[in-house]
Image 1 (cartoon, rainbow, N blue to C red):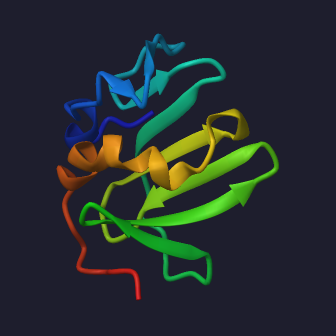
Image 2 (image 1 turned 30 degrees about the vertical axis):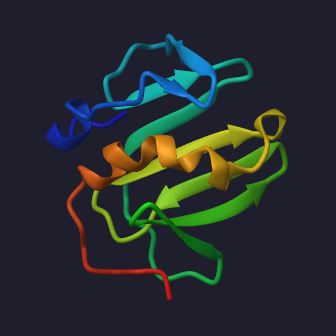
Length: 116
């Protein structure tokens, strides 16, 4: 949960792919979810440091992507605060879902770091 004003007023997508939004518990404007199992997005993370993890650029937003045991995590790179999207394996390749989060990610202040 974040009390950063940028995160508490972030505009989440109405849906992700064909998945509608679902409630989060506890309710928090810096966290949102879609579908079942839920894709979860949260704003307010510390920006990641340079890493050897995969970094991709989608619709002008840099994302550090790493595989998890049960899915994939994508965190904005070069944005502070950072936005994280957790995608369960059931929803397929995360890069195909990240465009839905582009507007929210682009609303976060840039730090000047980029994927290389």
